[in-house]
Image (cartoon, rainbow over the protein chains, first blue to last red):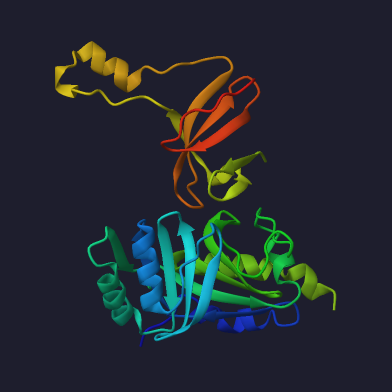
Amino acid sequence: MTVSPLHAWTDRLAALAPVLGAAEVPFRSQLTVRVSDPDAIAATGATLGIGFPSAACTFTSGTGRFGDVEVLWLGPDEFLVTASPGLQVTIEEVLRGSLGTARGSVVDTSAQRTTVVLQGPRSREVLAHGCSVDLHPSAAPVGTCVQTLLARTGIVLQVTGDDTVTILVRSSFAEYFAAWLTDACVEYLAVP
Amino acid sequence: MQLIPCPWCGPREEAEFHYGGQAHVAYPEDPSALTDEEWARYVFFRDNPSGPFAERWSHNAGCRRWFNAVRDTRTHDLLAVYRVGEPMPEVTA
């Protein structure tokens, strides 16, 4: 049986419920796409059915041939494609084919990070305890995707809804992140 | 903590960045023709100005891109940032 990085934390994350809906969404398919040629980026987006983000620090999402897919901007020539579990091998082959003769690479990085979805009106406030990026809705609207440090661990932070934030954290740092999150919620749990 | 404006990601905390030394140090055109002294000068010798200094920085915890910045070594103010390949902008300290 494959155990997800935050398997042991399922109950403790669920116990944050009055403050924050926090749950791991394990084993998402994740592919790092490195490509700089604008035509190849457009072709890859067309193949996927979801256009790649053109602005820095944003992500795009949509439903295509692989179901619900998100494309995250990680750098000027670097993107992360995320999709439902189990699709990584298929998507990798399709995307690699769509690159054609353009210079670029598609690498399956699904095991690198696990996904944690935080939901609730306090989600931005709790994250602000350890994250220096301005998470106010005016500075980080829905569609924002930043790589930054949260309590000294590297994360990819996606603002997926007004009150919903999706965190991608390295599998080996996932328990540290969960422990930090639990601690950051303490002050809100104490006051009903 | 000081904010450094990454040319891609915008202002971020200094802790997300990594310092890369003096910028615009050209690699020797024919390294094999260099004497030991010339090679040592290329590898080890750097300017040490009091005032504006063009440096390389890397946004390690963010987009992981290298960029250049002009920093005033007296005040630690970042006077300008610009992407790799772009010319050094005019700055007034």
